[in-house]
Image 1: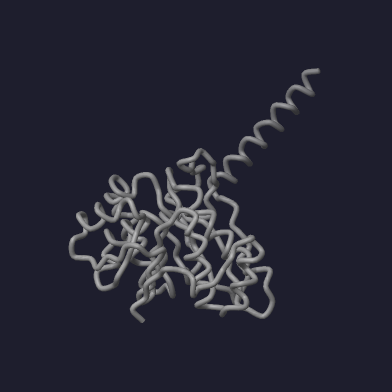
Image 2 (image 1 turned 120 degrees about the vertical axis):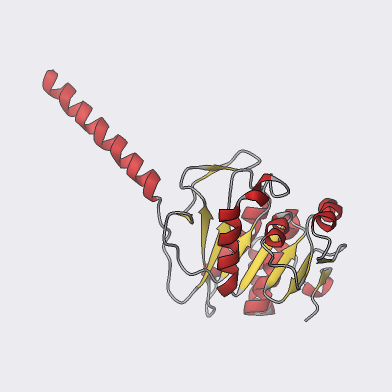
Length: 239
């Protein structure tokens, strides 16, 4: 009996150690070559829709033929579980403060609960966003994610937008910015800022149409039962 108890104790220690290592190292997603690397910056209080809407659209590019599809992965300042505002627990793929991460072609900044206050004091996060934006092909925000981009100084020379109810706060906090309201999203240069919510789908589809054209984008929209016609979408682009 003692022998079995000792064996059981050893087994439980090994399982515990393995769980600790997995939590510390994370589970790195499969990064296929010759794809766009799309990183989602998440933190506690991230809102479900602004994260999952673009993630759904971009991840589904992997099921379309003849295009440069997208690798999708998440980044946080930890590998511990992130809890969304609505209560989901998500394990980040990478800790951008401690790990080497893949090159990022497209950075997505979903809205989070504290993007109007304490998150804007996170200089490590803001500096990371600035570094990524330097080489990224696109930098996108949904809802109040625009506050992060604005605080990082990335929107100083472009037109942008944010969550409709926070436009007033946005203008007050960043009075030097050129702000557009009454649109679902704004595309200026490499920056796409969206009103967020369920309209995050439209902003993500717009980026896909920019990269892949109308037919592929209609196919992506159809796969998620979304009516898509860019001509019917209120957006702004000075290009």
